[in-house]
Amino acid sequence: MFDLDRVTGYLEKRFDEFSVIMFTNHDEQIRFSNGSRDLHNIWEESVLNVFVARGKRTIMTTIKEGSDLEKSIENLSKRLDQAPENPLFFGINDRKQNYAISGSSDMVFDADNLADQAINGAEDAGSERMAGIVYAMRSRVEIATRYNRGNYDSIGVEAVVRSFKNDRSGQACGHSGIGGKLDAYAIGRRSAEGIRNVERHEGREGRYDVILAPMAAGNILTSGSYAFSAHTVISGLSYLQDMIGKQVASPIVSIYDDPTDTMGMGYRFFDEEGTATQRVPIIDHGSLKTYLHSTSTARYMKTETTGNAGIISPEAWQIEMSAGDRTLDDMISDMHEGLMIMNSWYLRFQDYRNGVFSTVPRDGVYYIRNGEIKEYWDGIRISDSMPSILKNISALSKESEYVKWWNEISPSRFPYMIVNGLNVTKSH
Image (cartoon, rainbow, N blue to C red; front, side):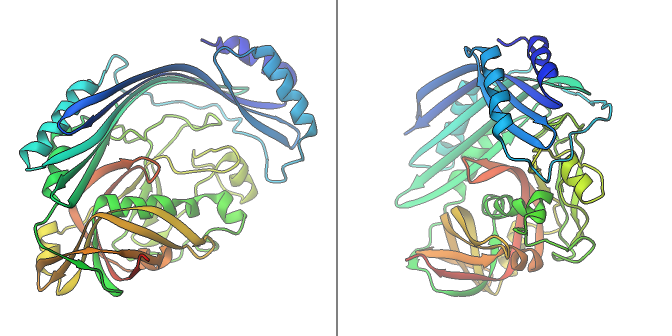
């Protein structure tokens, strides 16, 4: 394991600014299929994420345990000499920070037991076969800059279960941090209960009122969260450019970045330049309140950092949307004609500046007529834009779920939502 004092000693002598984050990781993975656990992996490693600057020349790298530390830093210094100046770098946070560290450092998630619970939940809800994964992650996180030092234990777990009944699939997921408790049994049950026994049909193109389940909403809205970053705005790639203080979403929509919510695994107590994190209102009742900032982007735009460094490009830690006042059953029963989409993946942008994208629904697309689920649809794609979706959200459920899945959904929390006039096209 690295000695952080030794590391900072090397960096202080060679660079004007630096930030080094040391992760000492213990990750455990349980994979299961067909009712039993079939793979158990454990990874342990110590890694340094290093950012350094000299004037406006900046560079970042990763140094893994076993590397020659002094040689790695010397090479970093030589590479920095050859790097171009970064006109958007204005230093890292030089203010003294106080970190509100919370949670128990001796907390442990039992991955084996959670996998068994997920299997049992799916089987009890009628799953004929299922597959899934439980990840339990534990990391000691330590940061050092010229101005601040801090550390905490990062503990999290996630579970994903995909169930099958005949030729239909359903999927559910969840995640938990140091302040929460993962109900893997409930995740397993949801994966099977989401499969509805209705006739299968080829989907029909058009614009529909659509109920997006939390996984589908999470895929779309966390993918679209790049536009919240001030660096994306400065680069001209955000659909929210020049929109501070303006209505960018339906009045019922409030979106936060909340790394202080330890119920979810996306929590953290400081960002990558040592700024204490905070709950940041991004959209409040439809109005855009702020972009997400590092110290550099904040100084460029003459405002304050929000604790979202990414030293160069800020990012959201844990997107959460406020819940509403409807139940899912109400949403279905009140719908004259529309769809319910349970999940989606492979979201791709055709135009970042205008937020134009497409994504492929999976694990349940259901056609609703006169308040009843009538058909199971195949072969469709969502083809729309982020601004249109945000402005056309007309209802939100009381229920909300912590969702995370692979690279498709970042750690987040979303309710069910109705989007009016969502554009549906053929997938081929």
